Image (cartoon, rainbow, N blue to C red; front, top):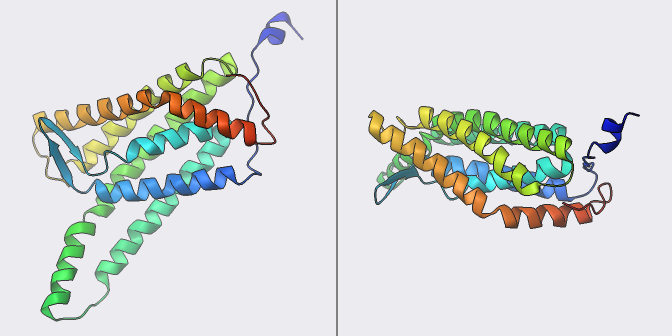
Length: 232
């Protein structure tokens, strides 16, 4: 073993034998599915333009950070793929529900129209969200894990903030490019506002929650038998 190898920081990861990963995976899927529904509504708050899922989606990245830091890139990739497939399934369910024949009275017709208006655009939003989610979460996880492998257990705050910037930018740009016409954004200045507000908001929220995310990561690490207690 060379001196360089001896001094190289060690990066620990846990296996997924405990129940904690399953709970976080379920929460990640629910957050993404709900944010897909909320994102079909355009929202204007003063000069800022966003969508109805704006308060949910940062939670997906926080959960992704915890999974990546504790379990590593391979497990995080499984979580991303599983969440992707569950969101596709939810979108197919919306399509089937809308397509099923219903009653022809006025009340039922009104409900059908409401379903079509509320859930009809969701498949396109899901496409935007899933493409952004897959690329953004993959980059987020990859950057976080590579930084951990380089620096070891230290500098957790740097891993969380660095991976967030890369992942959120890719995610927001992809999502907004597809979702903008669905929620009624058709001109470039409004689109630019939509992208910048989404990116800055999500990034700042995650930065603000770095202490909370760090505590959550520490809590899971201490309770994962295959990880053990490690300083970070």
